[in-house]
Length: 78
Image 1 (cartoon, helix red, strand yellow):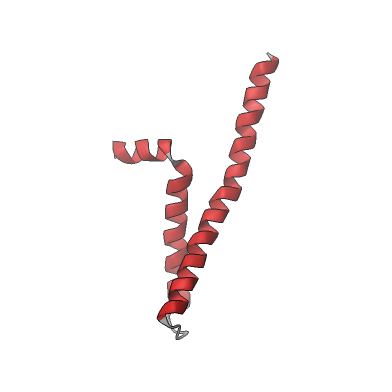
Image 2: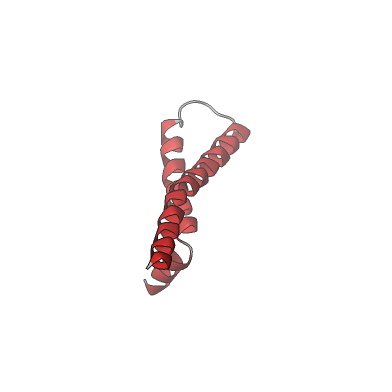
């Protein structure tokens, strides 16, 4: 458990991307299981889903960077 906490503390965006990607892939596979995709189509769909999860985590991370910059500038002003 301490290793998971250390990993989360060291790489929060990477872990968030992994967890979100797994959840999104499961949802996509369940939702599209009866569509009749071929193997290449499944691979493209899953790759696009993983990329979308990474993009979501990256965009959410923008706000974290703004907060860190605000805190640093507030400390400089004191």
